[in-house]
Image 1 (cartoon, rainbow, N blue to C red):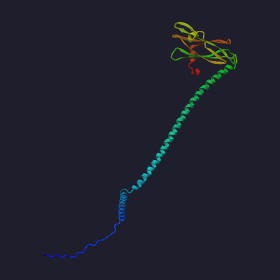
Image 2 (image 1 turned 90 degrees about the horizontal axis):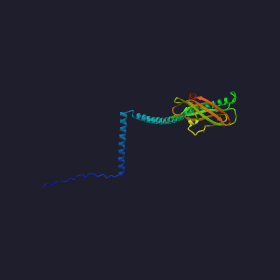
Image 3 (image 1 turned 90 degrees about the vertical axis):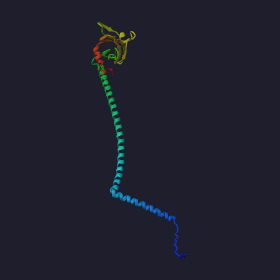
Image 4 (image 1 turned 120 degrees about the vertical axis):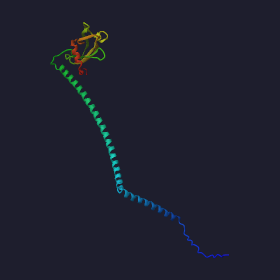
Length: 255
């Protein structure tokens, strides 16, 4: 039987150390922080090596963006100012056009007043002598859409100063009806009751207006006005139809 000799072997020594969790946590944080810083350093170095002007380009890009913002602000301000100027210009044009139209109207009214004043001065200056009831002029013009006509005559007198002259006007027209000479009285022309004549009333002059209708197929040649006043002044004047019609073409006569 074989005997085994057990030799005394040395046992390993155990080292006991105190466990510090906080210290271990700090070491891990330091390791992670160092690792992240190393990555950032590598990225910066790589960026500089790959594109050495990247930082400059980024700075220029930020500057360009700021400049674009400034220009956009200036553009918006300029657009607002332009819109305001356009509106102001439109208002000025409208006001100027209205003013021009008003001036034209006033000039026309002034011309009419000057004509009336000149007529009145001729009437009152006495150079043409004292005259009783007179028909100064006569104008007719057709009414659209029918056989009717408008008539305007000017009556004057400077014999009775300050006295109102009143009376009636009988309008008659001579012409051709077929192959016959016909004289139409006011009753035939007006369509009104017989004996009802237009009236007038004035001191020195008056624009007298009336209207009438010609029969179908009638061709006028002359128009006659018989004017009678209550004071006993009577006048009868005859005008060529063509002359009265030509005078009626002037729009100033009807203003």
